[in-house]
Length: 256
Image (cartoon, rainbow, N blue to C red; front, side, top):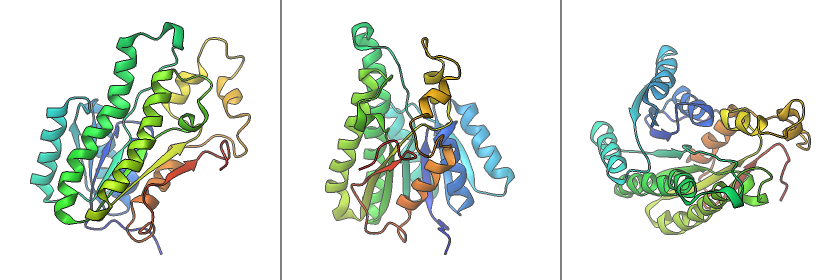
């Protein structure tokens, strides 16, 4: 039996590239009406156009997830246009590799504001809609580095993703009474622009990607690997009894 999201409405942040882009297209292919959200509107429009060209229902909207009023306005528009919201995927995120001694307060705030503050705003507004329905699913895209401390990412990235895991637990506890399930995924090395940035760090010898995935039993992962995990956790059929889970999809990099 295939996962179906027929008659479901889904919003995906960070849908302009990487994991968010692939997740938006996979949800649309599975039957959902998808709102592709990104601060980079042309990128989100490209994602939506590719889905539409394949015959699926997708639209693009610009959003600044760090702007509380903008987030509220965008989700209000989603409710107005569709009458509901069944799924939220918080995939928008940024990374930096500046170490503790050089990390400025300004850059700390920028990373934490996108990865944690923005996820909170989007989840809060989505939950307002989902509470009226007594159902919904929220899936957060965290990071394997949140569990390991990471080798290269900066303290701001590690802290924001660790906070995202804790926020997932909190929302799962607070929202279960409204029929809303909240889970997260911790990806391993995934072929995305973020991995490219890490691979090109000064000091990497030869092919940086090769060194990054050298210790991963299953090697390099791809956006669709995470997207399929999102579809599983978002499904009321396949994951009805799962909430508060931090799912590792990392090729065996972290085993617990």
